[in-house]
Image (cartoon, rainbow, N blue to C red):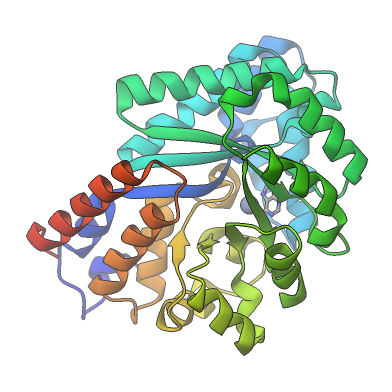
Length: 349
Ligand code: ADE
Ligand code: ZN
């Protein structure tokens, strides 16, 4: 079903959503590695893969939870060895993002996935930064990098990763926390996040994807994050919902990801509408689009198709929220938000 199939929706509703200017704030760039590019890079670099074909690899994308996905995701990233590999991966993403109306993209990257295999930090960051500069120049997509620490590893490993990245400080604006959530609460990374804040880096963390509301509390209170990545389990704690709304704390929600990783049984069960109705600054994002069934507009269209209660006003709010929650300069955010209002004022649908 598409959004235009829903009787209460105007025929142009899908075009309204697809053409709307947006920001993407939760995309793991390693999660944009399409099977075709994995095979091309494996051949280019002489890396052996555990799957005989692109089709066999894609067929393995049936996940039961976050960990079952991460095992395949880290294996896919093993084909990334030289600077051009990181460039090619990010450039492919930026082209898709531009086609989806993305004006601003803040990309997560997982340096430990690469440095643990002997790839130099500079190789990773230079390749990603070069693609970002080209995206700004040729596609008009404003962008920035956010370095994520892998939470299944130690805080000492995160501190060493930060040290290794600091020579490239001008190429990233913040840090995040990702990988296996259960059993690895935010407070495990209190010292490294304090250091990052002192360095003037923005701070975000995955919390409340599979982990309990308590992890959202400690991301706020201990790590002092500026956005919560996912956060959908906040609804289990009404006082937390009230706090998130009062603080206008953004949630970077990833609907297709949540279904693929069995956080919700189907998209029709997703709580995005409830989050918006509670006054939360929710946004729509793709997380790992090559693994979860699509890029940003695929998430927008599938979510609106599955949740007929989402209105045209909700769509405008989601787009405005995405810019409000971004770390772009205030003047850029205001310009993009004016563009969103003009789009909804003039577009049919
Ligand atoms: N790394 C890549 N995708 C992730 C997700 N959805 N949750 C945690 N870590 C991730
Ligand atoms: Zn994520």
